[in-house]
Structure formats: structure tokens, C-alpha cells
Image (tube, rainbow, N blue to C red; front, top):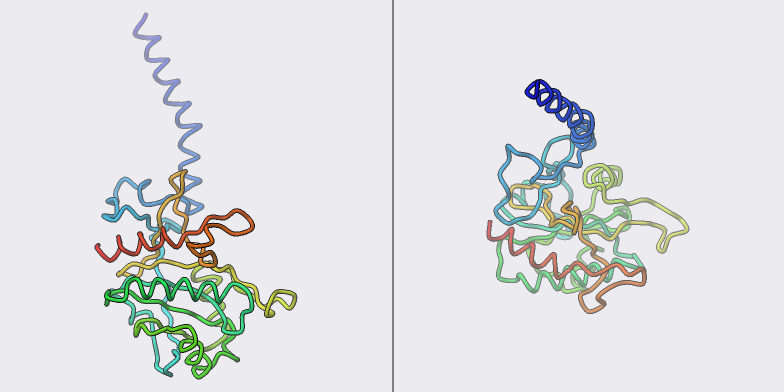
Length: 241
């Protein structure tokens, strides 16, 4: 008799688990919110940095090809084997772009001896930002790394890359400073072309790093903390992988 009741209770527990827990796991899979450590069949990255998972796949940089400040054709394949940062900016930006560029220059100088480090800066005003304009911008801010390409080309392709390829917001907005709005985020890409990031206090990937707050500032007016120091540490980790 006791065995019978034991079987009933075990069955009840299994049923409750199936009703409550399994649907939540399925939902996370459908929404693409599961990260590397959630997947039992994938090993933990040696650096401890997460992959960004979308539709059950590790998110990779989409293929691209644009012209840089030296009028050279640059593609995603030119960055293979390098750890690099991706940003979307424009040279006439009167607000966050100068801060973003200064942060990237600081990182450039910090990793000056690392041949496997680079930057891809995509302009969101390609009609104005010709290779000549980008060249002048590079000289103004001290961009010297041969693997830092300021890229221009077809406007629709650039916006597609920003908003769909990376999910880094960029748009024309007449009321925004300079007439364009963008997020000011940096994407960190590993040597195989996968987007990587550290995790927040809840164990979820932060996905992108704030690029418009300097280490010296510490935080912005909204109380958001700088992430350049964290980014510096995470670049080191990926360089060692």
C-alpha cells in the first residue's frame, strides 16, 4: 500500500515539473535567450566569455565588404584570426562619436603591440563620409593601427548591417544631434568571427559594451557605468584564446 502511494507522489512530482519547468526552457529556446552555459552539449569558452545565442546558434558577424579610408576594399574575411571591435559612427557627429573614438584610440594604443587586434568603424553617413573625409578623421584623432578600418559604402547595406546584422541601432532622425541617432555601443568579435561578451550579475551576456563613457568619467548622467575597463580585460582574454 505504501509503495502504491510512493509511486503516486513520484508521478505527481514529475507531472508538476513537466508543466512548470519544461515550457520555460522551450520558451527560452524559441526566443534565442539561452547562452553558452545553458547548453549541455557545448563546452564552456576557455576565456569565460559568453557567445551570443540567437535561434539556437552562436551569433556570427554577417559578411560585408566596404571601402576604407585608404580606398581599399575591406571584407569580414580580412578580420578573420583577429579580435576586433565594431562600431557605427559618423565624422560630423556632434555628440557621442568623439568620445567613442577617443575610447577606441585609447584601446588602440593599449594594444599597440598586438598584431591580432583591430577595429571596424562603419559610417552611417556614407554620402558625406568619403574615403578622403575618413582619412582626415583618422589623422585628426590619431588612428594609426593598420587593422583599424573606417568603412564607407552603400547606405542601405550599412544600415542593414547595423540594425539587422548586429542589432546596434542606427537611423536618420532630423531632431537628433547631427540629424542621426545611434546607440554608441561596441561589439566585441573573436578570432573566428563570433560576437562575444561578459555576463551581467544575473548570468546573462551583456552583448555589447557602452562606448560613449570613458574610464575617467566613471559613469554618465543617467548613472550608467563605464565599460571600457571591462572591455580591455575581455579583449585580453580573447587574444589569449
